[in-house]
Amino acid sequence: AQTVTQSQPEMSVQEAETVTLSCTYDTSESDYYLFWYKQPPSRQMILVIRQEAYKQQNATENRFSVNFQKAAKSFSLKISDSQLGDAAMYFCAYRPYSGGGADGLTFGKGTHLIIQP
Amino acid sequence: NAGVMQNPRHLVRRRGQEARLRCSPMKGHSHVYWYRQLPEEGLKFMVYLQKENIIDESGMPKERFSAEFPKEGPSILRIQQVVRGDSAAYFCASSQGPGELFFGEGSRLTVL
Image (cartoon, rainbow over all chains, first blue to last red):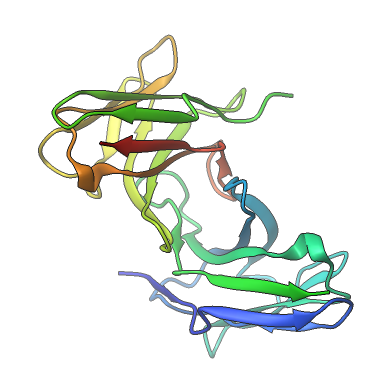
């Protein structure tokens, strides 16, 4: 069974600074997706960034980037130039590439990101 | 370009009543997933459906919970004889297949 571990229940960062949220996962699959979702107080789940395991290049979306280490099964999220609107719960999630079927997302427990003004 | 639509957003039920939550997937999506989120926790998989079929219900309690995704109309998650422990946020997500899941805004169930 796949597991996703987020070891940081809470992180705090000054506005405009950079913060890294860590995530590790366990799987025997070779092809899969990894995601970071953001859940603000409104509780909507918003996709932040995705990474296909077969791609060596780390995904980047504006101020958000990942450090994907496939051998180490590590998938950290870096947020640059933190903004107050980045304050939210961040969930790391895993999905096998086989898609559909029982292969929905497996989530970590989340990291609560606090932005200090 | 409507996303995943869930209703109601908030539902209050007394113990023993039935709760019915609805989800309309994104246009063109045939895969629907239901997740439950307890306070201060991540989302836990409950059930995966395609049109008229339950593909995987391994995350759903065996009693009182049921789900359907009829040929016409939204997917429905039904909880019979609700108890206080059923209070949670219930999220629906849809996908076309591989790749990301798109989530609705969730339905928050409160059992008094």
